[in-house]
Structure formats: C-alpha cells, structure tokens
Image (cartoon, rainbow, N blue to C red; front, side, top):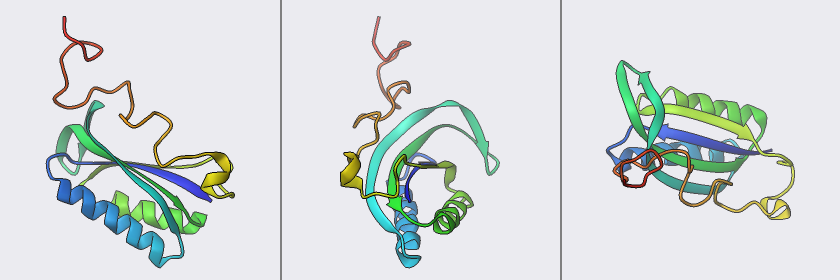
Length: 135
C-alpha cells in the first residue's frame, strides 16, 4: 500500500528533522517497506497552538514521507515516530490506488498542494497581513 506521512517536528534545529526522517526511513526499510519520496516543507505556523510534552508550540517544521509498506509496518512506523518527544504531530494517510506503483498514477514526489507547501498556512517569517501580503 502507498502511504503518505506528514510530520511536524518542533522548529529550530534541522538536524532533529533529518534524524526523525532518517529514523522513519530506516524503520521502513528494515521491515520490508520502500521509501518513495521525502519532501521538506520547512517551518510553518500551526493553525492553532498545540501543547505537546509539556511545551506549547505555535509553529513546526513540516516534512512529507511517501512510502510503500504493509498496514502493520505503517502502524509500527507511525507509533515509533509519534512517541518521539521532538514530534508535535504526525499523520498517515493511505493514497488512493496505493496498490500500484507511483508512476502508474502520475503521483510525483511533491504533495498535491505544491512545492511551496500548504497555501492556507503562513510561513514563519513571511510578510504580515491576513493572506501574507502587506497593506
């Protein structure tokens, strides 16, 4: 099955993001999964403040990992990543038609929302204003 994991890591240290992505990829490969793509979306503001591990977060570093694995392996990876104290949020979705290879569906390495990440979220450090523009 083809899955997409969107993970949000506490911001500030890119080495932590790389380590968590490496941990997920290694766990997938050790259990017979295949990593299809890894995309770094960078830091974004969260839609609302999140309290996790006794810390309050208003932004996070996002990355997307697409992979093929059995449902059991997917659950194992999700649980292993979710308990990491550096993680803020992690979600896994099954891609439609995930039983076929990536090229057969025209699925690229980037998420459907585009290379710039979700357009409804403001990047950390972006221009002020409701839609990112200035007045």
